[in-house]
Length: 217
Image (cartoon, rainbow, N blue to C red; front, top):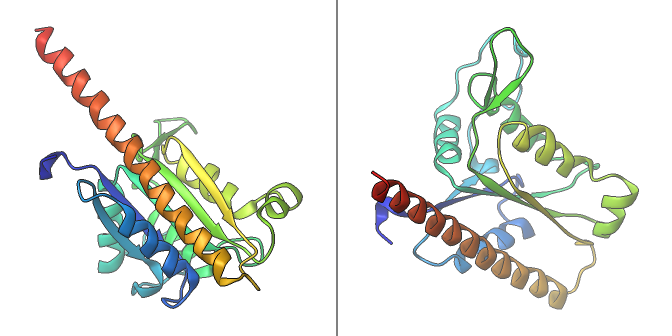
């Protein structure tokens, strides 16, 4: 596939520490993506920015260079992969600050004139959310109601126009064996292959549509 036609995956590691198991999950995913896809990375813990939206929405804060670069990556992506730990049921504070500062009105979404209806600016993108927990995934999902992933999936990504969003829970990380962690790393490779197949399918469908349009004239 030519460089111009390459689909792009942007992997967002929302763990503040670069030595966490989330980092290993990110690397396993990236290494399994075939070379005919473009991959870019956003490591939130390494970005230099103020995570506090200190004026709320009353006054716009200028985006720091790292946030400007991160937003450019997000907007150019076909597929977003979010990796983060669940802390106290939610996202790490720096990840929430990243979202607060970037997913802004007129940038990530806009309102129709004289209406509360929303127009998302992240349409034609898909996403995958991978979380690590110190409990079983089913406990977090069915007993606690999966608040962090519902927030990111439904009230952030889908709210801003992202289409299909898949979620995965890896836990319990606490006390997990090396063998279990290898299984999770293997899962990352499987997910990378699934995302590759889905993006290639979209590319083929887009090519067919363009050819139909061309020959219909």
